[in-house]
Each structure stands twice: as C-alpha cells, then as structure tokens.
Length: 234
Length: 126
Image (cartoon, rainbow over all chains, first blue to last red; front, side, top):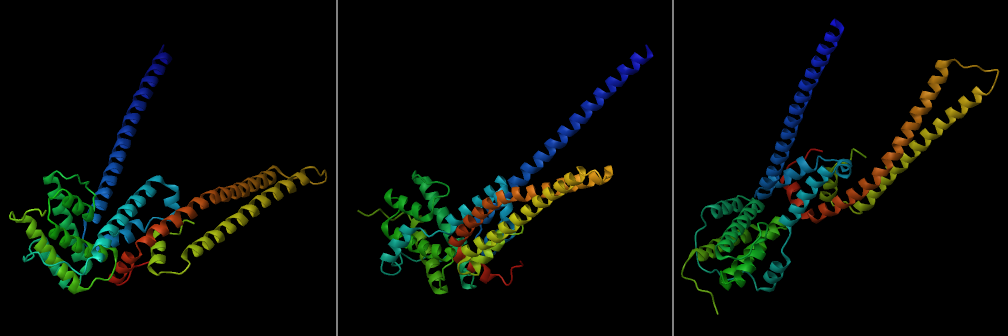
C-alpha cells in the first residue's frame, strides 16, 4: 500500500517536473526565437538605412565592417549568410549602376542643357551644395540624386504614373515625360543632373565645378516643377 | 578555407590585382591538394594500423594486452575519421571556390566605388 502510494507520488512529481521543464524550455526557446527575429529585423533596417544614406563612409563602411567580415566558407555553407550578402550586393549594384539610356541620351546632347530658370538651392539641395563645396562630391551628389528621386516618385504617385519603390531616377523621369507630367526642358535638365550624379555615385571622377552646376541646375528644374505656370509642350 | 573573408576579395578588387581570378583558383587548388594529401595520409595510416594489428593477432608468438589492442583500434578509428573529415571538407571546397568567384565578379562591378571609398578612408584595418 505504502509502496504503491510512493510510486504514485513519484510519478505525479515526475510528471509535474517534466511539465515545468517543458514549459520553461518552450519559453526560453520562444524568447531566443524572438531575439533572433528582432536581430534580423534590426539588421534589415540597418541595411535599408545604409542604402538610403548619402554618406560614402557609411555605405562603404557597411561593405567592410559587416559584409566583409563573413568568410567565403560561411557564404557557401549558410543559406542565411548567402541571402544577406546577395541582397546587399544586388542592392548595391543597382544603387551604383549607371542607367545606360540616361547616359546615352546625356552623352548625345551637346553639353549641359540651358538653365530653365533660376532658383537658390534650399533644404536638401543647400546641404548637397555645401557638401560639394567642402570637397565631399560623392556625398553631395548622392544626396542630390536621392532628393530628386524622392521628388519624382512623389510626382509620379500624384499623377498616377506607375512607379515601383526601387525605380531608378532615369526611369521615373521617362515615365513622367511620357505621361506629360513634366515638360521636355525640365526632363533634359534633370536627365543631365541624374547622369552626373550616377557617374559620381558609381565612382567616376566628377569635378567640383560640374557638381556645383548640377546642384544649381537641379534647383532650377525642381523649382520649375513647383511652378504652376508651365504647360506641357506640343 | 575558413580564413578567406569577403573583405579579402574586396581588397583584391581595390588593389586591382591582375589575374585575380587565376590567383583565387591557384589558392583553392593549393588548399584542395593539401586537404587531399592529408586525407590520403590519414586513411593510409589507419589501414596500416589495422593491417599491423591483424598481423600481430594471427602470430601465435606475440600476445597483446587488451589495452594495447584497444589503443591501436582507437588510433585507427581516429585517423580514419580525420581522413574522412578531410574528404568531406573537400566537397564543400568546390562550393566555396564557386562562391568566391561569384563574389569577386560582383565586387568587380563595384570597383570604381570601392576605389573611391578606399581612397577616402585613411586606413582600413585588415
């Protein structure tokens, strides 16, 4: 009788201990999984911040400090590492690529287009101009390109022109011209500015004078976009 | 080849090393040959130990204690396991080689940017 009771108590105790251990392990596991998910999310956000940055040190630093620290062994053995590295390299190549159509048209044009008006750079453009003047041409022109792309994307959305969130400035510009949301002079001016910016971001040597001219031209062209008086030609 | 980092490939691109892809191939070839030799040596040593043990076992005039037999068997297993491990590593080396070439070519497309970034930073620690 006593032995049977002891066996029963032992079994109940064992079952309770087992259940408690199972619950604790499950909690610990879900905590670890949540931590991993949160870290992955933070890394993803950091990648987005890096690619949105107009600072050469930040974009290049991520390549050296984060991507560069992975070994080729890890890249070949781990699908997760391969996915992070491939995503970064794909985005970087797209970020640094020179739009061939824009480059062809800009090279075919005879020099920079005529200034379509005059406007003093302000806000982001003023900051871009200040970076160019202080010798940070890459940073200034990357900032300028990002600003132009944001403005064009806003215009495309407002005008109902189809534009993906990663559409390049050149494609946005062509889409807006086709939809007659911008006139040809603004198109030519911004096409030239984007051509100069693409070259600089890609790593080509762009002189300070050319970069300053591009910022001034962008300011004038963007001011023209704001102006309600222009009418599409033709 | 756990010691080859992506940063080393970035350095190759930044330094604009001529025939970099051939150099990467030679480096992997060297590691492949070394691993193959180590594997063959370990498997050969393991077989030698087993053959030696068998020869002693079938000779009536030589008697080995249990611990001696156990030690030889353990050593044979150990070296065989090491040899097989090196063989297994060789399989992944092909994937690493293909991965290294793919990464190098992608980084090469970013060469002007990498050169500009490296020129703007005083010293990048290795």
